[in-house]
Length: 75
Image (cartoon, rainbow, N blue to C red; front, side, top):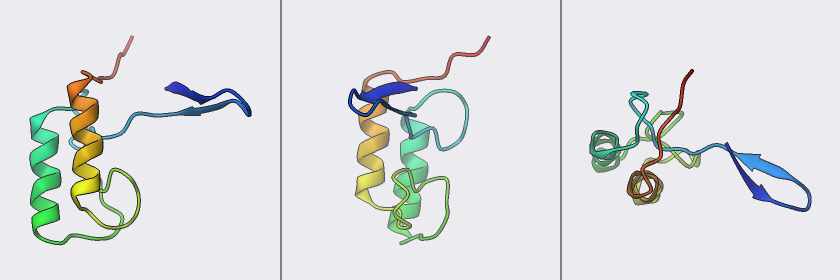
C-alpha cells in the first residue's frame, strides 16, 4: 500500500498480480493479453483498472508495476 495523496490523506494498493503468485511479471501480462484479444469483459482478475473491459489499459498497469519490480511481502 502506498500513500497517493497528502490532502486528504489517501492510500492505494498496487494492481496487476493477476495470477496471485506474489509478483507482477510476464505471466500476468500474458493472461491480460489473452483476455484483451478475446474482448473479455465483466468482473475479471485481468481487469486491473476495474472499468469492466480487459484492454491495453490493463496491460499498461501490469507492465509499469512489473518494470518497478512490485511484489508482495509476507511475514
